Image (tube, rainbow, N blue to C red):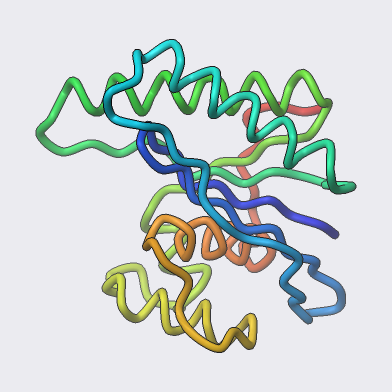
Length: 163
């Protein structure tokens, strides 16, 4: 099963593409879609959509896993990220890729086995589980890989779009 994990954002969308077969993970690709801060919101959203669509069409992806939107204080940032998440959903729908979502707590539980794990623990487990030479940077990339791993390890999956 080829899973694309996505950590949504407006400045940085972290992603990780893994192949999961018989409890074995193989890293296919990972990286970040970045948008310049000075660009208009519509330009940034189009960049995210176009770049993600390019990734989706470059691989035979079975499903996409995305982190559920969580925001603390900055409402403007939350709204922008929500719009970015929306174009991610549309990119999946337009390419008939099933989409699943996970809370940050589920991602921590699915990767580390502990829902209150700190970011450094998650990053180290991603490195170990995928046999990577170092923790991927920026953090959003490691988060994208963690979300993909979580999808493979979590029993009950919350599908938000079915192809």
